[in-house]
Image (spheres, rainbow, N blue to C red):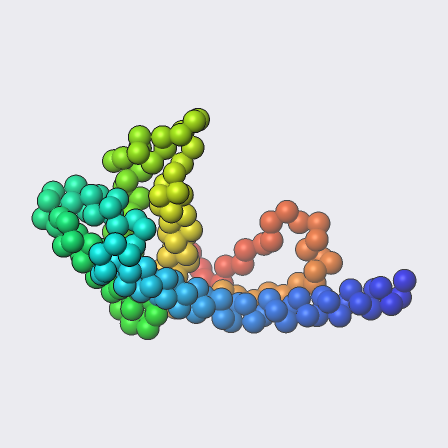
Length: 182
């Protein structure tokens, strides 16, 4: 029994160390990975026939811009927007601009759900198509953008390590605020 408790205590120390590392690095890694994702998907859109969402994105951009950007020009617009967002996130420069551009881009990216619902949910019981699933997953990008936006004024995650044993019975870990609400 003593060996089991010793093993648990060693694991608890490892868990606390990992938590400290996550507190120190997770937002930076989130920002960099968001930048890489946006650059990667943005670059695909520069080339005709490469992006799996090309047709839907082109039609949506044309509708949302009232025809100002149509056809391949719509894809160039979206590709450029995504690459700029990616560069802002990847470098950390103009991060506020990048987050605002992300908000605008996400409104456009999610809008096919309202513009083309019959096309995106045609199946039995209105099951989403692969394109609809591709769009719905953007909810995660929105949440990640919100986390990154919360740090642009210098806010940071604060480490208040607790033993695993003390947190096992809780449903949701405590959230600590180090800044006074104004």
